[in-house]
Every structure is written in C-alpha cells, then in structure tokens.
Image (cartoon, rainbow, N blue to C red):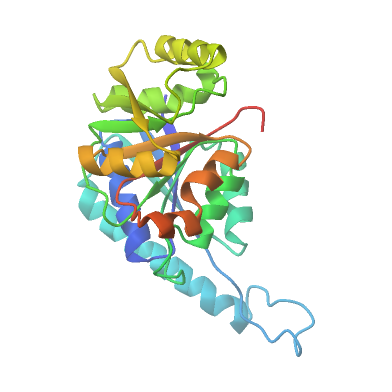
Length: 284
C-alpha cells in the first residue's frame, strides 16, 4: 500500500530542502507525493468589491507564478528521482490560505504525513520556526507533520530523540509513525527524560513501562538528564550526540509551547539543525 505524503512549497530554498529530505527518507517506499503551493490574489480592497477571479489580472498573474514555480520544482524532482519506480507525483496550486489549503488536501487525499521547511521566504531570520510552520504543526492534527530545517543532513536518521516527562499515558497508535520511521531507517530511538527528582512517581514508572512495551520491536534506550527544563536537556542531548531527529507528541499545545516557543529558544540559544516530527494526541 502506497504512503500518501503532502509536500509544501513556497519555492524557497528551505522548502526545496525539505522536499529533497522527504525523497531521501522515503526513497525505497512506495509513495504518492502531493506537492502543494498556495497563492494569494492581488486586488485593491477599496476599489474592488470582491476578490478577482480566473480571467482577471489580479488572479491570473499570481496563479501563473504558482504554476510556473511548480513546473520548476517538478523538473528538479525529476532530475533528483531519476525515474524512481516507487514514487509518483501530483502538483497542486490553490488560491487559499495555507492552513485551509493543507487541511483540505489532507482530508481530500487521505494524507498520512505532511512535510515542510522550518520557514519560508517571508519569515524572520531570528526565529527558529516560521509562522506558517508553527501554524501547521499546531493545527494540522489528524496526521503527523515533519518540519525540516536547512541544516538537516540529507541522509537517513540514525538516532531519533523522543523527549518525555512520563507524566502522560501514551497510546500505541499515537506512536505508530515514529516506530515506522525508526524501523525503516534502522535507527536507534533515545527516550529522554529531564528531571530534578531522584525517583519517578508510580504513575511515571507505569508510563515508562508502557513505552518499553510499545518500542519493544525497535532498538531503543532510556536516558535521564538532570535539568530544570526539557528544552535545556534536549539541547544538550541532541548537540552532544549529534542526533538526527526529534519526535514528540503535541498534546493540547502545552508541550509544544514549552519546548519550541520562540522566547525560550532565543533564551537558551538553541538553533535547530535536525528535523522535528510532530505527532498528535488522538483525543484532539
């Protein structure tokens, strides 16, 4: 059965890098890739009562830029793929806000993974994640999202870090995509716990035991670092070991905000260099 993967592009170097990473990650998997670009019409909100439609300058010019951009991406992919028999591609241009377009395609095409760059052409150079990346990671919740920075190595990950506080009970289905990537890449999963406490609470011990059962079929090890915050521990762990990917479950936004919010990232001086796989709580 083919995987259905959505690749987002705004024709920036970062988004192209994310596409190349996706092709490498799934080079031996049967995949239907959907390459999406969204565009905005241009019009004078005072003079024009309604936005322009097809056949009007304010619509046709940005539409043509979008389709031309996708044609360029298609040529680059064709050169990279060299007729990879496992992959097929569809190119989609939509006149919609990015989030709305992504949600529509995810539903319509039954997408199981979204892959994008960390930031686009209009995002600030001082932030780790662009505003669009943050929105997609937080609000596309019915499939995982993989966000790839420019600095990411164009090779299969060999070590993936899964930070946890053991305070939340995970479900096996929430971790399926993570387990699939670890297995297909023959990687090692590092479960990282940051704490200032010497011992785990009984419920934490139970949750750790469940994770051990869930990850029984893949190579995994448990690690503990003494740190006041998971963000600091994650920074030290990933940098010292030269890990290749971070994966976590975005549960009700709380964990996401504590680890990757811009003020905290700026404070600890953490510049993201590895892809981040965002999984989701099935309850949300």
